[in-house]
Length: 321
Ligand code: ACO
Image (cartoon, rainbow, N blue to C red):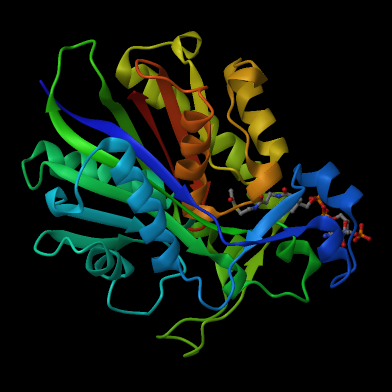
């Protein structure tokens, strides 16, 4: 059977690491408050020469190298971002040009923090219909550019970065590797809980991120537990079969609460929010690459990806590595 198989992972972070203590010099906050409420200790913030496309290109190069795939073989690039370099063209096309792999399909997906899940499921569909045989799926963000640095309730939560995977259509056995099941959801009723107060068609400005944190927290835990169960049922698996969960890294307390609801031990959850903060669409592939490179996630492992973000949008994918 033809499945979409993840054959390489990569990631990239900006040079500049900003600790909670650094932030406390700019806004009225403290390391203690941030660690206790979120688990975040530091984040990376892009400097002027570091953009969503430059971070994405670095992450993509590292994923290509890990997969042993040449950029010229890539026929599809899907880049998830809410912070594109430009309103258009799509940032994916800029990555395509930087990698020198013209001729294929390249477009952006916008589902905020769930963007990587949306991009991965879309790539899976396109690969299985024969649109391409090798794809790059990237999550890349420079959220620092849409933060209100005067608003302590939001600016401490986010960071910049990128993660990428090479996905290849392969003929595999039933128990072989590949994406086993994906489920995506959206509910546009909750826009005001998490949004950016600008845009080309409304204010003509880029705008700043606004959030009602408590409500987002509540919805995230309920929606994530539901979609995880949905994917497990579709794949005919139990929570106990999962080797690793690679969740969107919004907040350590959301990760704990979701794992508890599923009865999953905390040791099976990959956590990078302490080092990267919330990097939106980049967080799942960044965490995946971290756990692949430090040797935790190995070939053959059953891995669950999950995310929830603005919209609301949410989704999950179960993957045999
Ligand atoms: N430093 C110090 N004090 C702060 C800070 C800060 N950075 N931010 C808020 N406070 C204060 C508030 O002003 C408030 O003070 P008050 O009681 O005097 O009014 C107090 O801390 C409590 O504020 P709450 O907002 O009620 O704090 P809460 O316990 O809900 O924690 C948080 C806030 C961390 C945002 C939490 O609601 C949360 O994690 N929500 C999830 C949101 C999230 O992760 N969003 C990411 C994007 S969506 C996604 O990726 C899924």
